Image (cartoon, rainbow, N blue to C red; front, side):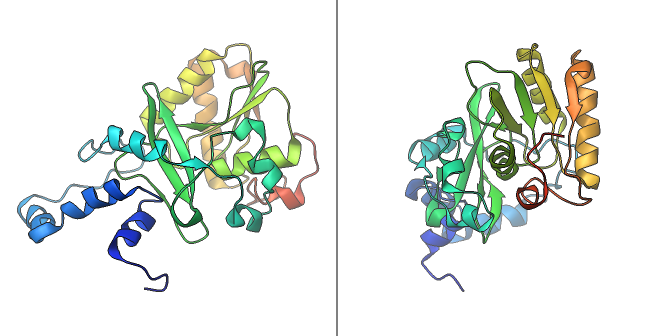
Length: 254
């Protein structure tokens, strides 16, 4: 109500910049009360607990691919600038086609799994979420021809922040964006195995969640024989994330 607009605009806002066809497909489920009847006659699905996979029902990868194909690269973002991430960082070659512009300037971060594009995260100053019809995979930057190190962070926003602070060369960024399921761990393990000669940096936040992810990262690295290649790195300030570090960290990789 505060933003205004019609029901199509609302669905596009909820879905982080989906196209008109995508929005109409969602709304068809509510025609003639069909969505309500289905919910009333079908036992409610239990929400997956942390570490469990979400059910496949309702997934539509072709629709996800079609939506992403219609989006263009974000070249300017008021939201990123409000987080002290510059336009120069957004347009760096490392992030080319990795940050897209959705509805109402929402930022779209595509996710990949073993099969290719599988979903997307959307983020703005007003909302954050993930595509309803896609799967969570891994977001990653472009891969340089000479790859010396891989840096894992907790979110794509923090990948941009870390790059702006340190400007590492011959580096690629990866993130699973949020809680890790067993499938996430498998994907990360495959990334580590694919680049056996690279240094691995777990640059997570200096908080409880970041430490938990660092522990998981170490276990995954050890499981694929890459434990000795892993370096743990966190902001010095307790509770700080990589976006905070744009203001607080010295320009050296700890």
